[in-house]
Length: 363
Image 1 (cartoon, rainbow, N blue to C red):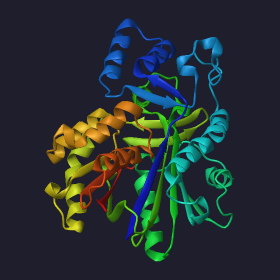
Image 2 (cartoon, helix red, strand yellow):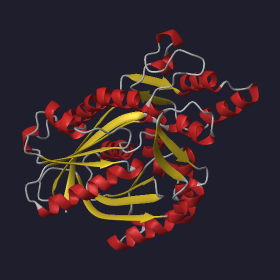
Image 3 (tube, helix red, strand yellow):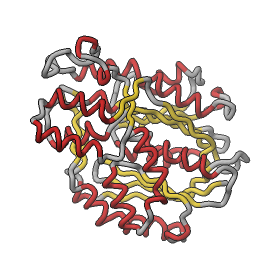
Image 4 (cartoon, rainbow, N blue to C red):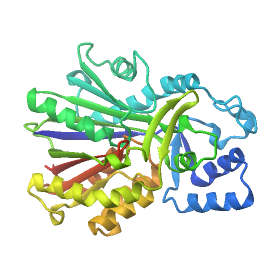
């Protein structure tokens, strides 16, 4: 088995309220009064109050924009090349900040044996892994790998990978860093998918240190993993490259699909661990949106307070894709304090429709 020893998080410098983002979108989408009322209703009932971005434009007058063209329709619209340039300039620093938060006072970076980088909002070669290695002065012989384009569930996939390493290699120190710059991929067409994406997504980073279970330090022991793919939903959540950035498909049917399948998924995962829902002390659920959290609470017969860490992260940060569930786990860790023996059930969802879960114990 393996153990999460430490969690670090980071966000960009620019923070925006939902009203500020709404004002930006109202101008770009050229909403009629009726359309604006609908958009305003969605934003005010999203459960999100603040989000972060590497882009300063959302809070500036048009003449001061640096990412978007200061024109009414944003033309010429930022190309994929420009978005990747901004990703390359901003993602490594954000990742390194989360790593330093994770390792400070916990582990010497020179002792890290494996580095797993996670991202679905930018790609290059040499890429994020090499940039992080160089910035952190990690050993040049370090084992490096990347989890790319898996979306919101990718952090759990990386934890599964780290667990396999720790089980097979005694003395391993596996560093995972997730960094996403979702706001680089804003699309100016007022389609339902683009409106949903503009409503939810934000930028952020999170890092975790995973070691073999014999490590005497406190943490979360990773005990079980389980995943399922609901193929009937593979067209309802998708993430594609285009010449103007990455395009999200985010169907309004996703909560319905989760309601139909999630309780069965949870039962299978708990059965593998010899546990039931009453045994779970903390629910670490990816806050993909308010409706998703409400759907999960309904399907598992949970009270809203049992998903409070997920609601809090959604309120303060929005949906940052892969790092988000680690923000939730960090809040749960703060609530636990020195308590041990409590079970945590984690779950996240992404393209496919893929559902990934883990069960951990506070030790």
